[in-house]
Image 1 (cartoon, rainbow, N blue to C red):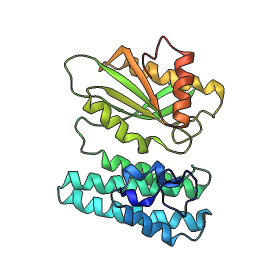
Image 2: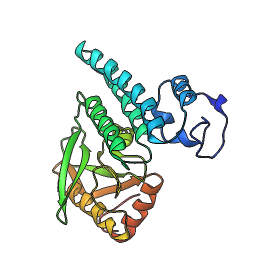
Image 3: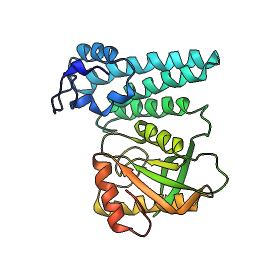
Length: 245
């Protein structure tokens, strides 16, 4: 990432600056010049003008990932799939508000699953029930001889769990398990964004505590943006369950 972009805290998607709209994905993009090229082709932000630009980039990288995976280069294919995932995620922004956005969101989830296909330890796509609804999340644990500490990685309003895999990777590198979960009203969290939806986060902590790989007495929570708000909400609601934030 170049420091020549300048800094301006704004949400203008036609300008690439540190602190700007694309701050959500900077660290996940390998080639900023490719991002700059895509932005230069944008003609608007309505989905008919927005989605095709990012979908084309995503499909290009996903096809490259398929080619590399077939050749047995799993490290390079993972990088390609992660680039595809990120461009699909930009196309989905701010969320699954239409059928077109839902389709590119499905593309994002598919590319991320491909990116994780050869990880060791693996990413598990898990489901748990809460109040008659099913929540889907990503669980990963390091190989260990005894239960380990764990982190609930809580997503916000416009960045879904596929874009928080890097945080899960950091947990693994530091000997901790992690569960990555979409925020209420987004992705595969069926609960509406409302104060009472904190119970869904509590259910996630309970799920973590029930995993044999996890020490239920050492579970923390992490989030950014609205996810950070949710962390504080959860910690205040269930301090006996959340030991660190």
